[in-house]
Length: 319
Image: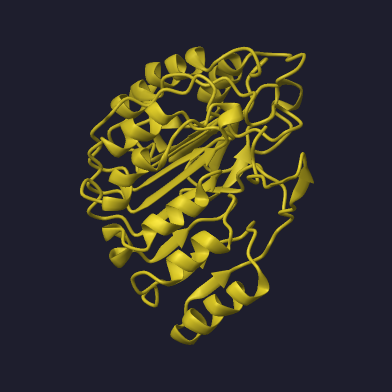
């Protein structure tokens, strides 16, 4: 599996890329509320800026019916942040009364490596779209998420090769009573992922997340510590899915998870991209498959390297 990939769905709608200036008028446009609209420029040698593409979009589409927007690449995203994009979206909020889903930074490596994407303060988006139900962002460089209160947000996704600890702490300190789905890619310290177990512990306590049912704390260098803490984390008892994939999970953390509180109530346990031995994988199968838990134990390309007399393991997404 390659990481990350372009979104194909948002808010239960298929993603449709708004045509570029050369295709304007040639490609039939779907009904405004039938798709999630992906609006993008080019990272390299852009013919138009993202905001210019957005202006064409608002002129061509009945924005009062638009339910989901996916912000794709913007010009020189490896150097420039999305401040103008955020400003354009906030400025158009009155024209987007039906907007319920927003994703910022839908780029693949050919456009901009995940840890090269320059992000910014997404607080204005969360503040000015109080009816949002789904919000996602890709890229951790320069990312700021202030502590916030949001009464309608059901899904929050932050995909990075390195998620700053301050962002993790601020999300943990936010009041999100409707949130059912939280997905954090914690990443590696080499790319700014300087969080520790202490930063994610409030999330695992779940006090501010009464509706949480799907939790992913993944792509982490300290995945063993997270798995060990999950063995007694209060939030686990009310989860339907638990995702500890994409990180450096070894037999040590896996054994601690298995030895803790019951997991048989889960619908799915996702541990793909792992460093588990076959006997430990079999223990998960013996313990959970009979209860109907869907397991993903695929090693998924996780490979160990050895140099300087040490074994080195890697998260799925760094750069």
